[in-house]
Length: 122
Image (tube, rainbow, N blue to C red; front, side, top):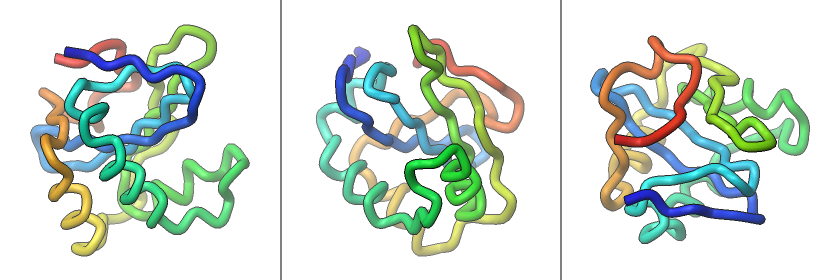
């Protein structure tokens, strides 16, 4: 089941088959798995805890990449999610623990490093 979020920017997280972590930015329009909708408060808490000194600029993607995250942003209008950045290092144990502890964390079948777009969720 996919939950649609409209009108509000919202960031959610997922893990792939290789254990890599990704942040998905909805741009107020992008889809998210139903489990994320059910636990959106938890995803927001993790997102809000991340240091993003360049928030509000296109360079914010580099802030997330520096934390060890793949970054996918919803392309307006109509999507899909497009990869904006790849990790430039490994996620800290603290960040990895926070993300992996998210209830019903979405798992991507495949590797974030092998794709450039996400058009749906399995």
